[in-house]
Image 1 (cartoon, each protein chain N blue to C red):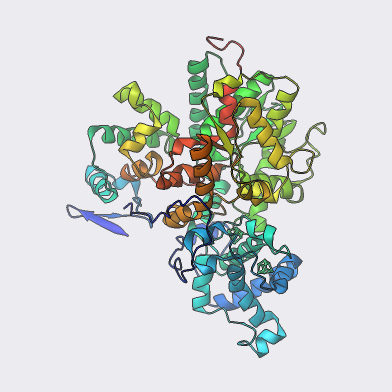
Image 2 (cartoon, each protein chain N blue to C red; image 1 turned 30 degrees about the vertical axis):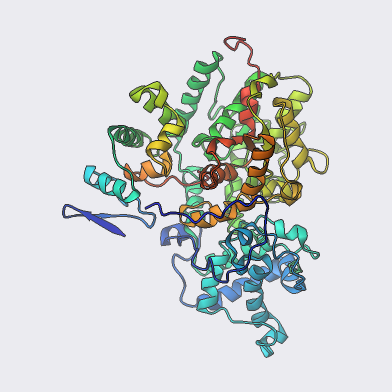
Length: 110
Length: 499
Ligand code: SF4
Ligand code: SF4
């Protein structure tokens, strides 16, 4: 599978996640977000950026609690919780946000 | 794209639906890639002579497992299993009646392994393993969560789960693997857990939890990693390092060890309790995954192995570890190995080795969801029925308000969450939502009638599945709780700020 934005083709796996994380850029993120029905606000981008930073270092998405805490620090304590993350990403912060951030899909009992 | 899922309506009772043939014949999980199949020693793609290979494998399994032969031979079509499967109740597809699911294999068995079937195929309902039959196999043997509820009602004890496992093993052998299970099993062999959590990531996660708990309680509860010479090796499902409410349960285990003053450690080499080798019915894979745990226990020189909240893995540990990786003669014989974390915590509470303040959970009215593999595939503790009693006793120790759901949906009659058996994957989300119907009905009733606001459980799959699908039924995901999350909230930590 694949999609195309501004003349660039992005390969995806059968679940629609980017096949090559290095190919990720804002164009791809916007396309993936639209496909997921997510309207990207600044808060959405904060989540995506944090996921990418964490992935860069650890080669995996962070545990949900690490993510909520980081978002709380950036956007205010009242937003540092799972509920708020689900408001941003109804498909789940781990799966939907990872997809938009270009990360591979988390596997396992999650 | 998140499509709208057709959620069955809650009617206030678990009803036998009017059948809709073929309703879910299009549900099928993604197939494994060449790499994922090869990782496990299966052919990368469907082999040219797949029919021959499949029948050969079936022959092999029939001679290895006499039970399979008996199951295929002994059904009298009494129909008492027909309406007992949550997938049938939720999807209305008659192929999800356990007897019909078995029939998919039985007809091929008759054709190839019985005289009547080979001579008079039409009369005896025998059929070759054609392309169409294989399509049905892939679809409907992946609409069985191997929960064994049907077997409880079968007068002959026919276990559809075992038939599903055999079917999946046959398909794998022919190069037709399922992505979700096979990819994950590859990760366990590579990295040590289903998630693909690397050692630095695991270390970071545990450090974070240490800080988090100390911030919250003022008590330096440790989350040790690879600590040689610790008394206990704790084996948790890796979801406990990643998702909510799994993590909250994991924090509970840590607090229990801390308060009991017992040294423990997590292993980065064996950082997974789950064992999907069982779901694909492959003994060798199951053994390889389990062996990592034995190796880690030896390497870390621990005295005992305690395992976390994970249903199917408890079945593997309780019922199969001894054959797979036993004997555990290198561990301290004083202890039962493995011990379930619920047994462990309850025993500490019974002898007052740790203290709880159950008013901490006064805001909760709790019910308990029995997980299928714990209920029907294992036991716990020293007396029969321990797998039902121990978790309930533990809940009642840490929370004053406990309510049971409908008696036909608990204990050995419990309904699967709808995501077990290797089906917890996004492309099967409709099946998962529909399969959760009976549990959603029973839960909804006690929420409405008895004010229940918490459903505790001891299985990582159940937790992930329910947080995902219950909102489709209008039930908040925060209802879903780890049993040790309740322990975590009630345990009295010495030196806890404000106490
Ligand atoms: S084992 Fe469970 S999922 Fe499979 S047919 Fe029986 S009741 Fe249905
Ligand atoms: S209950 Fe047992 S014997 Fe009766 S139809 Fe089901 S599998 Fe066959």
